[in-house]
Length: 79
Image (cartoon, rainbow, N blue to C red; front, side, top):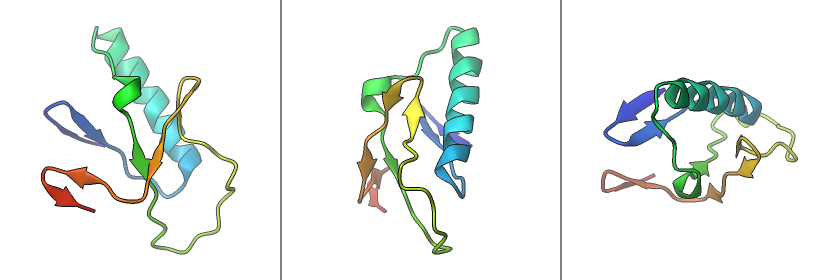
C-alpha cells in the first residue's frame, strides 16, 4: 500500500487480494475515525503477467462495487 495525502494505492496480483487489502485498510482507518470515500474510489487493472483471472471477481469496498477504469490520472500522470 502507498499513501499520499488523501490517496491510497494498492498493488496486488489478483483482484481477490485487492479486496482483502481494501477490507483491512477500511477497518484500520474506520477504527481510528478516518473514513474512505466509497463514491470516489476507482481502480485500474493491469495484467502485466498475462495471468488468467476469474472475470466474475469484482473489486469491492464492503458491498459497494468499485468502478474499473482503463486510464487513470494520478498527480498529473496518465497511467
